[in-house]
Image (cartoon, rainbow, N blue to C red; front, side, top):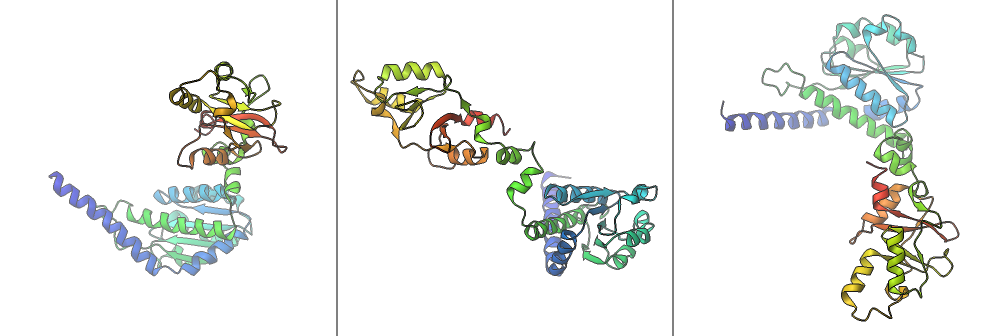
Length: 325
């Protein structure tokens, strides 16, 4: 088969999935998604169930629920029959994923699931199936056909189940008023978690001997010597090595050397930035990163101040990058 023909078929499969998603969005009862969300908010745990490719969907749903602070576990129907059903409690909600709706392993445990749980939610591809009829709430995830040429490989059906799951997650996040901080607490090792949970104070350069304090009357030569010794790419202009009245970066020094011919009389106060942008020590790394990058001219280093507006450190973009990779 020629490349041109393959391209046509590949695009057709993509367009087919868009059409199926559009059809589902027009057919689905969106109020049922909200109802399911309210059931889950009031539940002790959410138990997800599935077999085969649907098991992957169920595990993914369980992981997503856990990530937004909702206690969730995946239950394999075979293992359920051999003791694992003991994890179910009377105030737990079950979410079942099944395209056919007649998955034998799940059908066999339906009576036990109904007996031991608060409610069963079915995300089902066949609303006339056994599992759909025995679910307390059935969300219609049916499609006309898969996008694969043989109509047998789970493709479009998985996409639709994913989209419905995502809609439910969004509903839950709004119902539970999940914030970035809530999400970060479940992801302490992830980039978002580190951005929100780590503070500037935890990664900044600090200590009187490490900081490049320079008096405003210091000469350009003295300024360059101190900046070279401290190797932080900046100088903190201060009368008492505490309060900050100005800030100088490597870029400021380079511009001075390029634009001013008589350098002998130049003092630190002549090239400093007065009232520089600063950041509080208790601010998050995410706040520091936004302050440094979300501007027309990015900032590579910031002075850090305490609650009394005393300069206690500096933080560099390099320091932040080392903690949010």
